[in-house]
Image (cartoon, helix red, strand yellow):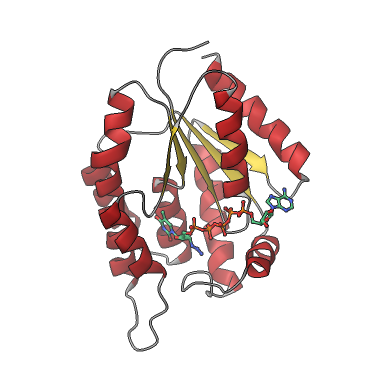
Length: 209
Ligand code: Z5A
């Protein structure tokens, strides 16, 4: 088993099953003697959680510019990186993240159709060379994911977007997942047991790397 700390990210549309997957992965790692530091984005520090509340809030009187939304995501990410993710990795701890940079590229780049160059400049400024060791992308038809999310209760500002927004977001997720290394595509429409089998197979590769 590897002693190098790993940075593992779980990504996907709402209702894809990220929270459920993270609980499973955490337990799977713990059974192997690894207690990961768990994060979520946007959020994970007091300031980043305040930004999360702002970004998810429904604003009835003011339109939120897509660029503002993107900048808030990266402000929260910078705070989390500086205060939690980098210190954990530097201390030899594994990090298990509920969303990270791929979300901004998919939601703001794909969904909101923001300029890719603008996003890449922010990525470079905030992340530098840091990249996850493994990204588990839970792929789901947005109609199915949103229905799962809806059953849980009221939808937030972003969740209330039209289906076309989530379809563009999914397309961007898939485009990135197919073209970059270190990303496992998990079919999240399957029953939980099958999803967990796919997660295990991808995790075993980094555990033995
Ligand atoms: N956002 C962004 O735009 N840009 C960024 O850079 C970042 C984020 C970082 C954060 O929401 C919002 O911010 C998100 C993207 C945006 N907004 N939207 N819209 P979040 O991450 O806090 O919440 P979420 O994405 O909406 O996650 P979620 O709704 O909590 O979904 P989930 O964690 O993926 O799903 P879950 O809670 O594990 O499962 C949902 C339900 O399905 C639950 O009842 C499960 O029991 C059930 N489930 C799970 N797996 C299965 C399977 N396999 N079969 C059947 N049922 C299942």
